Length: 209
Image 1 (tube, rainbow, N blue to C red):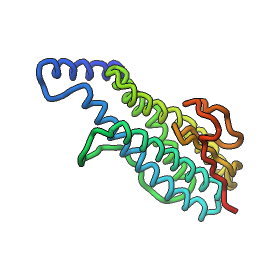
Image 2: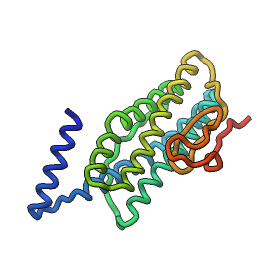
Image 3: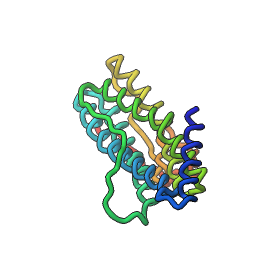
Image 4: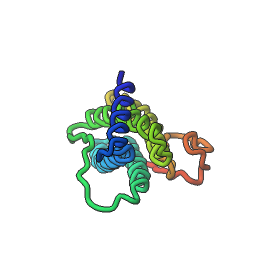
């Protein structure tokens, strides 16, 4: 039903465009890229704040995970921004945002909720529009992001399980692909399973002693 609604919306926009209206197919993807850029930018800053808070609460590995994931969100924001290179000027951007700085467990749950929203709702909708419009650059950027967000859910869930038991996350090393933002803890995967670049294109984050 959700995807059917998207299709109806796109067909309606196409009809309006063909009738000489102001709404065009490309404007939908542009709007989605701007929204995604805003959301990823806020996630980047939110994770930095939550990472610092986790370290102060006695969970340095969780703090390192937040910082690494913040970098991944920065990569997604940069990818979206580059697709908007011809959109010059100011714009009001509507994007989902999460707030709160309470406990590390609650912060992790907030991160999980935000990532699930992107995986289950936001990016599938944006991808469907980009596919129907044939916008390959935006489609690549959205797909890179959604695949990384799936790994973030897994990593944050494992970290929350540990924190809820009163112990730190058991991984002190996190790797992030500098091209697509794919994120993993432990051993590196060569090549990147998402964008296929080599391990030399990963940035590694290690918990500070």
